[in-house]
Length: 210
Image (cartoon, rainbow, N blue to C red; front, top):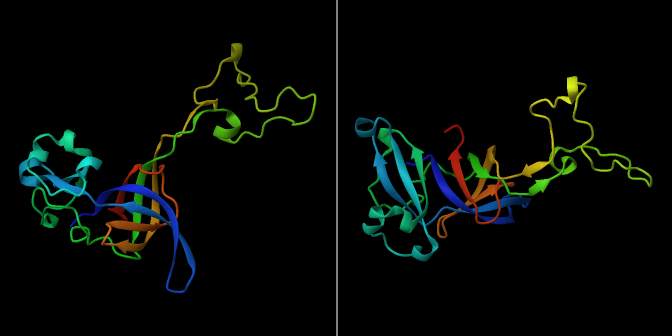
């Protein structure tokens, strides 16, 4: 039984709960994955399952042992998911279905780890929320960062000073998200709210506290 699974973010939509309330959800595809390696405490010193996400050209095809001999050619992403020795009840090459993901149930809380969208080079107003200067005519400040010397000798700039720079592409972890619906037929999880990353990006979903 896996406590974590890789997924591809499809996008956001909305569903209705039992009370008829609209709930915004993010749809995550967790299909097209196979167990590529099994590690045990006795052999490897720790227990985990290595899971591989198939490349698009091989999706929908039956598993072949050739895939394990050249994993990078057939799997777009490979990730280890920690499990206990007692929870390892699968075989090499087995497809990751909701039988292995029995720990994921509707209403359960999950933690999602992903990479935030890249926003390129941004100034201090966009990147750090600086207020900026007056917007009226005659001002020469506007969206500039301002003084950086910080009253130091010879204008020394302190380490960690907030400046313009690259924004985004950070590893982001969001906890306490709720599984609203599980679509076993299409292999999708409907998770309440937004999760980090852009469309088609890879995310790691773990049951809360695991």
